Length: 121
Length: 108
Image 1 (spheres, chains in turn purple, green):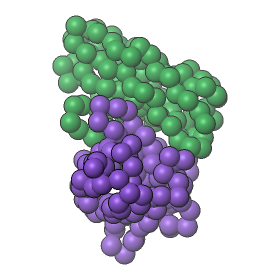
Image 2 (tube, rainbow over the protein chains, first blue to last red):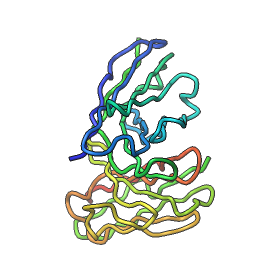
Image 3 (cartoon, rainbow over the protein chains, first blue to last red):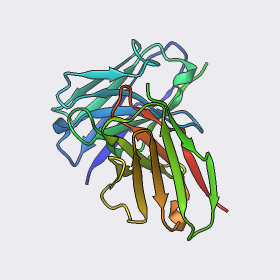
Image 4 (tube, chains in turn orange, yellow):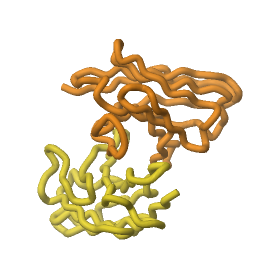
């Protein structure tokens, strides 16, 4: 059974850093693009970042560009999101999402349960 | 950036009724690269439809998608109790990929 398990969410202060991890199982991780999508409390979905299957190409929303870095370790079946210079508006549940193929265009066919990041002083 | 506008914001219906949700894009969506997701309270979204009209694995045939260009529709032919949820459209043909703001289908 396919599974995406996020971890690393926490309460941090503005300006601090955090690294999220997503452990994947039940499918050939190296064959699919992966993304992070977030959802602020009571709000809609916002795409954050994506990486192709081989890790050669990365993409970011303007709202996080220069502050967040996506990466993956295909040998460990794990996706990461390094978040620096966190702001209050980054407060959200962060979902690890599997793409339907290795590169664009792809839709999101499986979602993790999410990990909550709270940025507050 | 292609902005997706969903309507209505909230749809109040009874079980057994038909639900029609719309998603309008600010620019034509290439390849009809539109997906629809369902989100229950406290849960992650679940894929329903991709490519504007293809049902995902395990999705009941009461869910159907249609449309092209800038106008897309998700139809639930007869609402079951488990269908009351929030629905999001998503375009994945342009950059950046974007989501609609959601339509809540609630019990009348």
